[in-house]
Image 1 (cartoon, rainbow, N blue to C red):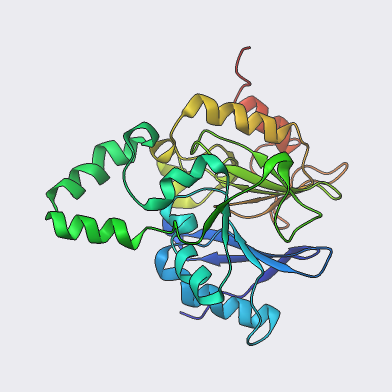
Image 2: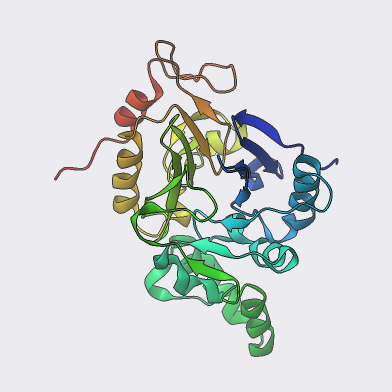
Length: 277
């Protein structure tokens, strides 16, 4: 299989999709108004060569992003961050509430259903030395730095981060307010990973994060509605195709209408009702 090709989805925003099927995940190469590039999310641990090749193709041989920005610390979004950051000599920026997870160790207060039902029981079966090695391999504390206050994004003065906790305690989305481009991570997806038919068919529709890998479902639902209230012109998710809104047209998914009728943000509200205050 060939290396993924960066796809321009908005001015200065290029999508790189890594893997196929349920394991597919999106990363983004983004150019700021000042001309600097950053990588948003970093795929699985084995994604580093594919991301490096995409950077060479888009930026030119020997050129590197100025920083790595993560929406959250899950292995399909942060897996290659440590390897790339050390290779490129750059820092990895996350919300302060994600920093405790950067050591790669299991923290019960931050666990999700998949951790409790599968990952932790399997880890307990490993010899202590092997378990320590697995945790050490996921440790990126040497390169992680907390994002600053007020939504400022390093190397990206025309972007801001938007806290969107729930999927993880410190999940963030990245917004370019000038044209409404939203890199939503796993807070809002355009593929339904909560149904068997969605997983098998890859059917495109607005959806919340996968319940099995979500820390707090109610908080995630509130974040989903907070992001929808921003009325983005383009949702570029962690999983699924980018989804664009026109001023009069229904939501488009790369030229194809989703199954649900009407503006995708209204569909989102119907499928995931806003929590009561």
